[in-house]
Image 1 (cartoon, rainbow, N blue to C red):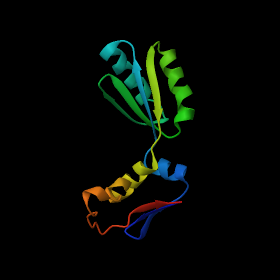
Image 2: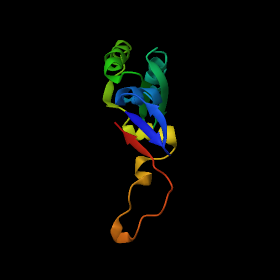
Image 3: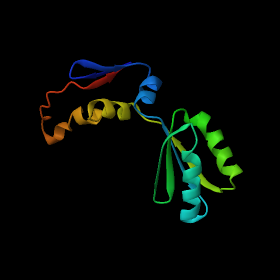
Image 4: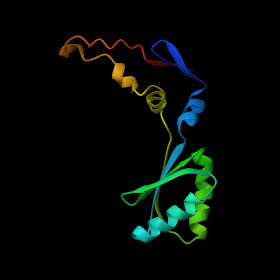
Length: 132
């Protein structure tokens, strides 16, 4: 697969390779215990080698990891061993649109044709595409 921006190949690889290149999978979790539980879990998980980045907002902890499906069991074991009660967990993977946005600074949709009922599309001078 190629990511082409303004006629220049910006990146090449399989979809999974491109997704891993720009960011990892995101594990979002909520734990019991309010701010104390969230702080404890955040510190425990930040110390794990499989975790690249940790952030917390609105009572949720977001972890960036390389291979989410492989990281989940290890993360759950760490929380369980520390007696932290998990309330919810979600695994999200980057999309090809995320890859394109990171590499070019624009969304694939930025160059999509406009609804013809609203008039002709504005000239953008861009030929941004993602092709397999």
